[in-house]
Image 1: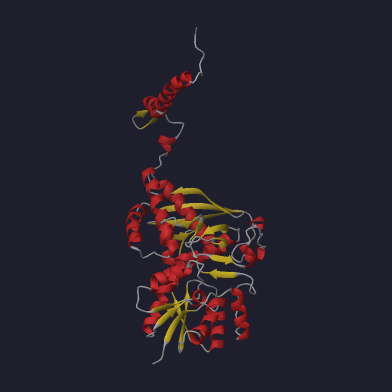
Image 2: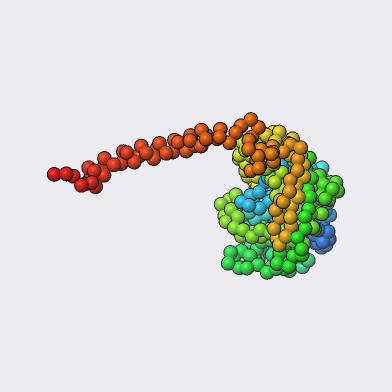
Length: 411
């Protein structure tokens, strides 16, 4: 009986060596390669095909670009960032994992495999999806304790046309929402990255004159840029190109992974930065303070589950119940200014605005039927409990000072 395994195949170093290892070390007769399109550049698919041909491997290419774009827009409604950067790779992994699982089941595979190491997050994100099935899960790089240097040597011995990112220097992961660059000298936190690690963003110091861009939202979803309606994937690609010319969307950070390791990561995410900035700017206009305060907690929980690759968890569905209710009012437009690597909102409009220029203006005397004098009583009460607590503490401490000889006694 033929033993068949489905492999998450990108054509990169890790997954390329896994093809041979699954046959030589694990005894599988046939490896089914699966490449999932979540917005990678065409060159990556060409690289995957070239490497697959060298292996004699047939690969399935699954188009999940639109599905991924929709999840990215869900993350916008949740203002989802992890330790300050927009989630990209993390959100793509469940989409990729589900697509690979579908192919594995269609091809009657016995097992499903990935090329992740035992130190990263992706192993957890893939397997959280795959372990819902009865298929055996295999992780050759993790289980064999492989290093990148060993893999490079192995690929050379097998004469495989594969590189690890930029001529083998960097490890790069690209999708519609973000581009991550890691490995090599970037693993040294004191190393200053060269400008050529970036592809999506121009040097902010060389950016052109500032530009104003209007983003329109409907129920919290981005729907148009400068008056032109676009599908999610097209809108993201448009903003990646536009905002990237201003150097918008770069992150260089020390990231805390799920396994407790601290790693140095570099990211590019122009469209994500613009959309998250604009969305939050619109929420500031239409949500009450109580809604904004509570939604911050909800958003943080959504982002945490998103980072873990658990976007199908029951908690996420519950969080999205609240998020969805708030987003009914997040309809309107925000104008952002792009300049020198920065994106900031400079104008907002919505029929749901809870801002009143008349009552907030210093040129009007009253707030409806409330006079300025009415605030006097509020001002008297404001901070009262704190003042009382300080007075009580001071009264209690004075006798103690006297008992210790802190005050002179009369004779």
